[in-house]
Amino acid sequence: MAELMTLSVRPRAEKGKGTCRRMLTKDLVPGVYYNQKGVNIPVVVDMLPLTKLHRKVGSSRVFHLQMDLDGKSESLPSLIWDMQFDPMKSTPIHVDFYGVDLEREIKVDVRVVLEGKAKGIILGGLLEIFRETLEVICKPLDVPESIVIDVTELEIGVNLHIDEIKMPAGVRAVFDDNFAVVGVVAQEAEEEAKTAEPAKK
Image (cartoon, rainbow, N blue to C red):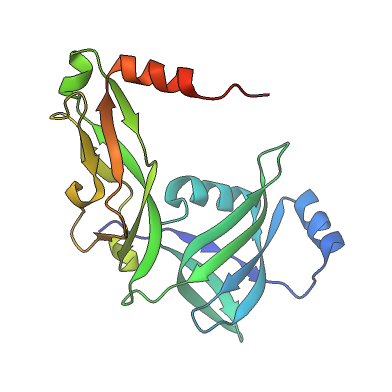
């Protein structure tokens, strides 16, 4: 297992939109740390380290949140639960951290990655991805970076459903209906489907 990344944050006493705007002008991002007992702590974090961490771990990988609590430095296993971005600059303007228990399972969305070239594509079909992410349950340290799906054997007209997707050790998919994740369709069927779509106003 790779060593977990660490992000340092500081508790903040000041609240309000004006205070948050002033923080952002100093490349500081306001946020909140939530633990599993429902306690929330307002925090502030430097923008550059936060951006780098988010690029590496996304919203499903665990990292250590380093914070001083009651005069003592604590390392808290956490996830980035939500991050809001400035629509013009694409920089973070607020972040929510969620503290996790490494021994308790959590539910997260993990991105889908396809490998191989489907037989159906070689015969002229089109590969369709129906789900970009899959919801899974596992312990925090077992959360995979991605769910890798080998599509090599897929022929035209064949879909891979969620119950056929091999999950990494310690990970299980969450689903009620056995939905299709990826498949190969004939080009004619794809063109007919597009023709049948109502014109956008």
